[in-house]
Amino acid sequence: MQDKERIHILQRSEGLQRELTSRRKAFKRLSRLIDKKDNDDDTTISFGTPIGKEHPNYILMYNMLTGIRIAVSRVTAKENRSITDEDFTAAHKLAFNVVGDELTPSAKYDFKFKDYAPWVFRHLRDQFGVDPADYLISLTSQYILSELGSPGKSGSFFYYSKDYRFIIKTIHYTEHKFMLSILKEYYEHIRNNTDTLLCRYYGLHRIKLPKGRKIHFVVMSNVFPPNKDIHETYDLKGSTLGRDLPEEEIRKNPYAVMKDLNWEKRNRKLQLGPIKRKMFIAQLISDVTLLSQLNIMDYSLLIGIHDMNRGNKEGVRDTTLQSFQPDTKSAQRRATMQKRRTSKAQVYRKAIAETNPDKLDVSKLPQETQERRKCKFYSDEGGFRGTDEVDRPLPVLYSLGIIDILTPYDLKKKSEHVYKSITQDKKAISAVRPTQYGKRFLDFMTDAVLEHNEDIKTEYTLHTRKKHLFNY
Image (cartoon, rainbow, N blue to C red; front, side):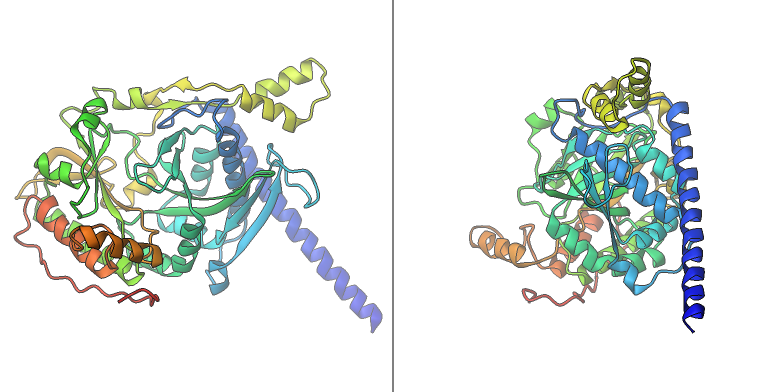
């Protein structure tokens, strides 16, 4: 009997070894694909403030991308399968050096990385039409990102991928926890709404540097297309109280993100004919209904306007975008030629520290991407083209998306509502109940945002499905 058990254990061990070998080979194939792209591709772009060697988040950014490469490669190398309930709470912990080599728990590490719900996000990326290899190459092939401070009050930072398609956004721990709590509902909504205007999330991760704090971040789609200059940008909440960017700020930066009152003062309207405005409002109602059910408020409709007559002639991205690429390969060759006894990780660390940003080459940006073609709101040259009242195309392209969807109506927001209601109009302030927020948001979109709304219904039934101690 003992011999039979021993044989059975050996067989199981051999089977496990074969599976591990198979996974390692698949992982190496993906790594070679990325390395090949490293050699073939030219340096491209990023958006915002360049991250230089003096920047405190410089190495943090590099490690974020290294962690994404390893984590996403692992789940992609496995055979696809259906989602289970356990997948929504799963999390994988990893420890690395700067090169991306996995370390034992006791070893000295450059950073620790945690990948949340990897199978769920793999399915979400598939649902959104994001090719796995393309995703990895865009985010990790040349480690090219820059940093942009959030236009909101959250203190978050955005890092744009080299091709301007993806965004890494740092989030607060409470947002991270809340996202995990609504992930199942979000996933089901995406499955049933392939053309959703909601923020498109591709990954949820956490990173920790030695003796540093834990930093949570998401990877999501960029609302704006990589191949078009955005001439005007608006962040609309449907609230007018304090929702104004001063004209002096706009004069300093004509491409700054403007708000609700700026939209009204400039008499801006979305020019959408009958077919497209019904399509837009129907999807907006569906998305806002979900947000209300999940007890979410404080979200915005982000609108980017591209004037097709002006096109890209003004070179907006030429003046706002820069890029960088740590030349780790050249540094490693120099170390080898000089016969220095230097580890690969030490070479990488030095190369990162010595990198400076380069000038943008807009011509290297992709003209059209696969994931944008799949969504009707991004399928007109990367956006949603304006139309007249007989549905003929107009020379304006809109980029539309509902952003900042991780704020629940909790104790903090309830307290803000009570405090601001004492001195201000409680119906006009931003912090209101999710159902009230949703109705005000939809009313503003139909009344103030659309040029024509005669054929749009203005009665909406919104409910909060998730119970919360401070709902009323």
